[in-house]
Image (cartoon, rainbow, N blue to C red; front, side, top):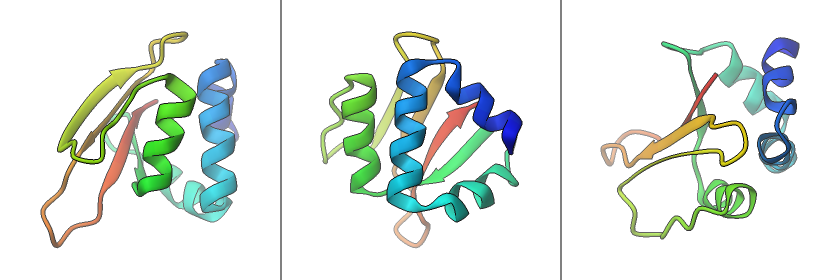
Length: 97
């Protein structure tokens, strides 16, 4: 997990996002997500707080009505995306690591 944290801390915007995410959701949620990285994508549980964190950290205005969103950090070009899942599935923000 420390290697994963180091990847975020090399960028000011990404480290701000990660710190705020961990404060809002707890270290346990991040640690569980870090154990299940698939194809280089970290899946972080999505909620309205995450939408606001992306708006504040990266300057991307994600509207509540978005069904799909892809962007990257303006500093390090780290990619992230969100796609609204099926109604019976939980939503995730995917972050490329």
